[in-house]
Amino acid sequence: NAGVTQTPKFQVLKTGQSMTLQCAQDMNHEYMSWYRQDPGMGLRLIHYSVGAGITDQGEVPNGYNVSRSTTEDFPLRLLSAAPSQTSVYFCASSYSRTVGTGELFFGEGSRLTVL
Amino acid sequence: AQSVTQLGSHVSVSEGALVLLRCNYSSSVPPYLFWYVQYPNQGLQLLLKYTSAATLVKGINGFEAEFKKSETSFHLTKPSAHMSDAAEYFCAVSDPFPGYSSASKIIFGSGTRLSIRP
Image 1: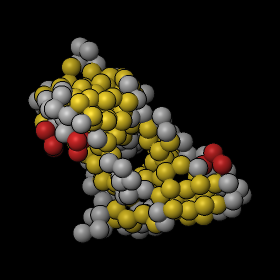
Image 2 (image 1 turned 180 degrees about the vertical axis):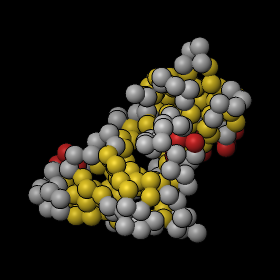
Image 3 (image 1 turned 90 degrees about the horizontal axis):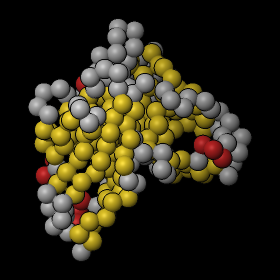
Image 4 (image 1 turned 90 degrees about the vertical axis):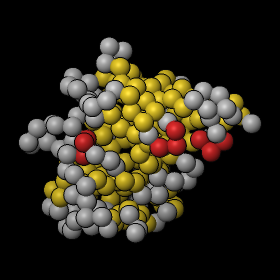
């Protein structure tokens, strides 16, 4: 049972490059989300989705794009990377669109460094 | 807007001592509250959650938390610390019923790193 799978685990980019962080879950969860984790700031919500074709912004959406074409996948795109996007990124999913009543299941994280 | 404040970014206790991690919340509606734990180089996992039933909530690994509305607090405790409890702990809050046009969000605190002294 894989749960939530994130790739890559580590990535180094130069300023201005683009890349996509991949997230896949095999639990048939409706809700998927992306967080970034920075020292002293906890986890901040970037974007989330309550089902295929439906996405919305979280607390810190600027510089990031998402799409949800299938229930299983929720990629996060950085179109033009900046040093301020150096962080650890976590994908998380939940069985219910009203995620507040339930539990988030997290991937192991993707560590991104932008030079 | 909902938020949580975790008091103390780093807590250190001796093995066998009481663990107390503090969390205060702000919410305009009755919230749901969570504690998550993150072990080194891993994602977060749910420790326990409060969903407006019993105010004293028991979680995994001997942890428990008490919801106190009058103090807007949801502190995490464990009677006797073990070396394996060393991790980062996050308090989180959500509005479980945000309305038809909205989806819930879980908002996290800044985290408390727990160290255990032998």
